[in-house]
Image (cartoon, rainbow, N blue to C red; front, side, top):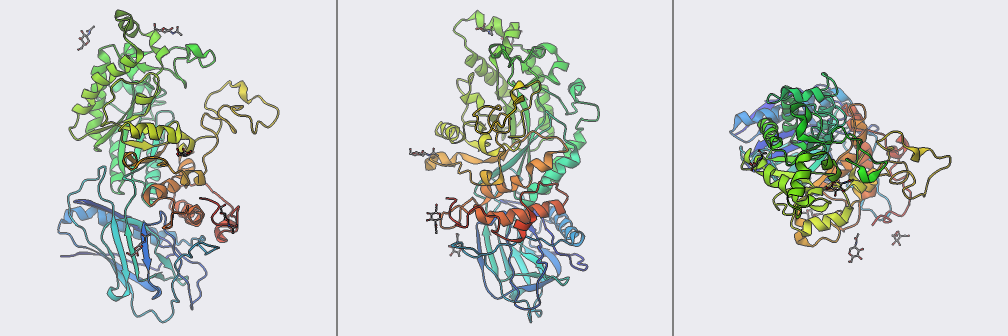
Length: 612
Ligand SMILES: *[C@@H]1O[C@H](CO)[C@@H](O)[C@H](O)[C@H]1NC(C)=O
Ligand SMILES: *[C@@H]1O[C@H](CO)[C@@H](O)[C@H](O)[C@H]1NC(C)=O
Ligand SMILES: *[C@@H]1O[C@H](CO)[C@@H](O)[C@H](O)[C@H]1NC(C)=O
Ligand SMILES: *[C@@H]1O[C@H](CO)[C@@H](O)[C@H](O)[C@H]1NC(C)=O
Ligand SMILES: *[C@@H]1O[C@H](CO)[C@@H](O)[C@H](O)[C@H]1NC(C)=O
């Protein structure tokens, strides 16, 4: 049984996307048809070159040539009609984009050297008899929730014989292009099978160190939906501010940066709903017990240790935090747990995801020299160590976190297991997010049996190399170029602890499962890129670099023969950047526009296999 939906198709534009999300048993489908225009198509012997990002796992092309796309009707084959609201809305958004943008993408791929040429079609002429007039979507089942591990695979077939595009699952796409004369065409036949390599493909938004407005958050979700990123890790708070409206402890938002820099419950619901409609999960993080001063101290100053200490990285043996401002939850003070439970339970009611991130990074032992509860606890029994203190936190806090939902999976930063101090018995069902030590830590964690999310700062931190994050820093008072000086400007060239800047090529070329056994590699559930940004810089930092990460985690960085395909990503990404901007996502420019219009002209090497 089909439910059809007629959509108006006015004079056709040049570029568009269609993001459809089908929430159904076992399958969440999300696809965009990105209609990319070839500006200068002649009316005969036209090549149709499309280059979707992320590249699908497998496309099989025919050579019958492109056919026109007419008034397209959406058909779905599921009787759960109520579920189709999401699909209809997605379709409507897509068609609006088609008609609004009138967009002509400049970047196409061209064959070079030993690379397999991108498949091309034959001419458009005399092929007007058949027209694509429907998108037929078949949905396996109607009840799957958008949660970790949901099946995101799909197949897509374009066939002139049926005049339709048949989709049996989900994806963003760039198949339909303008014919340069106001019409749309699509290459056919095309068969695509597609599914992600990794179920977790995320970016992290930090609204604790700087506020980010709701419209800017939604802008990121738009970019994510287009690049098949599916997890928004929302680092809600940090030491610096508490921006989340709370009913249990309304006083916490006294530590927002201002009354205008607070997320209301309806703001949060709006973000979650907007994300869900685009196949994006929202995983909240409340960073505890480190990185915790703002908010908590308003409930009870005693539950925060060292909040008013000098952070002391100038006299490091006294340092109470590695980044200003200090403050850690007092692990021994009993009321800490009462307040943590109140906050956690309230947030659990609003965030629907089965995963919750509870922080656990960068605990500094010196901070607890300011706590009589902790110092007494340590002296009461001289055999106690700071590792025992971390374990004490886990033993008391984990039941609170697990109590909120039996299905819940907890995430923590790797520090809880790898740093000094660390827990002595960290449960293996906690997903650890690795951000230090690159491949070394990935190996350590996976070989210890942890499921992990890879955020290695040397590859995936997008704010690196933009200068340090502290002031009054004499290390920058230099009168010659510090190039080459190891640690000359804190962390390397360009300053910042994780310098240098991570380019899209560095991100894409990161082989993060190198040297893992098969069993260890299975513990890698996905990847995530975190930067520190505010509303002004957020889109610029993420895009289009996060899209390179999207492809890395969706279909990998290698072609069928096992060679790195970074060179082929270039045009996809340059094109995608333009498309993001056209969709209102303020993405950074990567290369001169000339490079986009002249594939490979800007390659550093003519030899296309120098990247291995
Ligand atoms: C902090 O307290 C611990 C435990 O009493 C002690 O070993 C350590 O030396 C103190 N740190 C400093 C910088 O005084
Ligand atoms: C704190 O809580 C623990 C565990 O519930 C209890 O054993 C202890 O007596 C409490 N301490 C104080 C000072 O209330
Ligand atoms: C992988 O393991 C091999 C053999 O132990 C070693 O030579 C190589 O350096 C490792 N590669 C990386 C990137 O760690
Ligand atoms: C794609 O599918 C075709 C047809 O099933 C198959 O022959 C080909 O090997 C596949 N290519 C890749 C890269 O998996
Ligand atoms: C291209 O570079 C690869 C990797 O360095 C090298 O093995 C190959 O010989 C080069 N090809 C040519 C034609 O120079």
